[in-house]
Image (cartoon, rainbow, N blue to C red):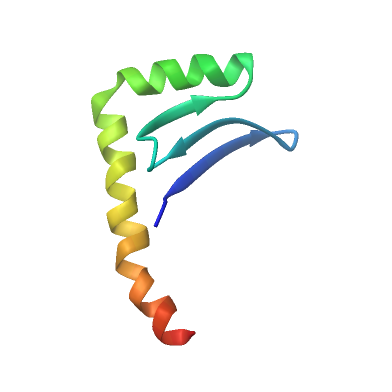
Length: 67
C-alpha cells in the first residue's frame, strides 16, 4: 500500500509526496523549491508518513471486505 499526495496547478503536477519514497519530489522549478523546503521540516515528513497508517492501513480491510 502506498500513500501519495500530489499538488497540481493548471492540471500540471508540480510536487508529490510518496510514502514509498518517504519525501517530497518536485517536477517543476516551483515544485522542486517546495519539495526542498518541505523535506527540511522533519515534523512535516513525519506527519505525511503517518498519513499512510491513518488513512490507508485503517481502511484497507473495509475495501477488501466490500470486494
